[in-house]
Each structure stands twice: as structure tokens, then as C-alpha cells.
Length: 413
Image (cartoon, rainbow, N blue to C red; front, top):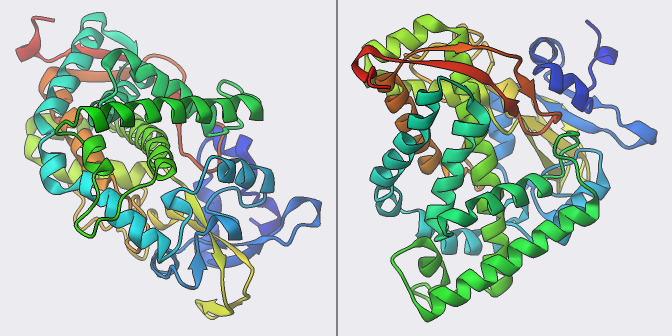
């Protein structure tokens, strides 16, 4: 293989499958290299090894996420970065001190107490979603199970009525600006989706101010101990971020997890026979899926990574999907092993200021779904073609046709 054959901007290549052979070659031969850009653009650095990804991820001073410097997505697409900017400043695209303030305000909605209080409801949702799929036996696992669960959980957290939950799904699909033809919409439609979501979140905030409840929205709207509070725009943008990020990433982790269990039936049997493996299985699903494949960072001052000089103003892509297959860190990284230990994957970003706010919630959703699947489903088989998302940013599965065979103890289905 040669560097000229590698094009990480080719979304169609990612639609076929994740080009792990490219990342493996890069880790061994060019762990930090300058990727070319179309139209004689300046290019961007590609970082593929685990230790380097973690180093960059944790240094928010040298490697900025700030929207005004270019944000965290769209390595070469200035228009896409501008679209995101038009939707308001998200926590994802802030540096300290703004990020620190904002994060401390929204953290109040994600305390262990608030997340743990959702456990019982999430289990009820999982059972309610699985039962009709089991009765049918044949279903599209992504559409009928994996996308439905995070949608219901986010709706529950935000106090969105059950019947409105699909609005969140539709808005988030329109806004991620995917190049995938199944979801593609005009820029105008994507902006309209953001406006509709802002109007909806405004109305929700108004209701909670008039009628406070014991939920995340009420918590987020209250001033903190110092009297600081989220502005109207802060709240709107956070609502949007939670609806899009919380929905998209968990949906894809669940889809990849079940696809991996289909491809590795011995691992599924192991989980059925030993449900205590659910915690390590959840971590392996996250490592294997790496739902967000990379984030961009923007270099604020001359620096070096692994001896490579990198200049102020340069763009850097940190590839979590590659770090999670790094042979120096993970033994047999291309083996799906639900008992893998240790498993210090970077699916949630590998620490640092931007460590995923919803990590505990995502872990809970995945582990409860795996538990209930192992309890109720004796066998899962694929009965049609897997269709992947056309994206080099989100590692997405759009369709996964499966046949679910109820376990003997659940044979009433």
C-alpha cells in the first residue's frame, strides 16, 4: 500500500466498510501524516495511534475545538462548519473558559443520581420495544429497535411527550448534514430543522418555568449555586446537541453491537449463558463500534506530536476508530471479545475537557438492551443486506434486517 491510495475524505469508501486496512497501515508506517486536500487546500494532519490520540484529545489549549477556528467536524468543508456555526455555539465547539462554565451548568442534569433514576424506565422501554420485534420475528433492527431506544430515552429525559419523539429523530436526521442520499436534504431544510427544534425547546422551557418538574429541563433552567444560568440560546443549543448526539451515537453503538454478535455467534452464546459479562460486553461494543470516527482539532501554537512538527493554524484529525484497533494497546484488536479486559477504549473521547457528557447514559442503554436480548432472544441471524451510512464522520448502520428467535424460556412469543 502507498499513501496516495488513502483518501479519508472519500465518504463512499466508508459506506462500503470502515477502511481498517488504511488505518492499520498508517499506524505502522505513517502514524502522523499530512493528508492532501482537494482544490489545493492546506491539508490536515491525521493521527491514528492510541497514545497520540489521547495526548491531543486531552490538550485543549494547544488543540482547540473553538468554532471560530474551524470547529470539530468537516476536515476540508468550510461550508459544513459554517452550517454548524449558524445553529449556535455548541459545547462541542467551545474551549475554556466558556466550555468550563457551560459544562458545569449542564453537568447538573447528568449526575449519577439523575442517570441511575432512569434505569427502571429504560428497562421498561427496552422490553416494550423488543416484544413486538420478537412477535414479528423478522425486523429491521436499526429502525425498529436501535433507533427507537435512544429516541425514547432522550424524549423521557427532556420531557418531550411520547408522541413527539419522532420529531427529534426527523430533526436530527435533517441536521447532521449527512452526504447519505437516504437522509440528504438541502441546506435550507437543515436550517429549518434547527429553527423548528429551537421553537420546540423554547416552548418546553416556557412550560417548565411555569410548571417545574423533577426532570433534566427544570434542573438545567434553574440558576446554579453561584446564580449562573443557561441563556435561552444556551438551552436551545444544548437541547439540539442532546437530541442529535444522544440519538445518533447510541443508535449506532447498539446497531454495531448486535451486528458483531451476529457475526460472532459464540460470543452471543457466551453472553446468554453468562449474563454477568454484560458490563465487559458493553465496553467491547463501544470499542468495536466507535460511533464517532474522528474529531477535528485546530492548532493554536507550534507544537510536536511523536516528534512531528505541527504549526499553529494547522488542522488535525484524531481518529478514535483507529486508536480503538491499536495493536500496541489492545491484544488481538480485530477479535470481538465480550470478556476483553482491560479495555480502555476511546469511544467517548479518551478523557480531556470534551469527554462525552452522556457516557454513563449510553453505557446504561447498551447494557440493559444486551441483558434483555440475552434473556429473551435465543438466536439472532441476519436475513438481508446491511446498509451503512455514507459518512467518514459517523460510523453508522442504517438498516440491519434480522430474524429474532425467542429463547425457550421466552417461548410464549
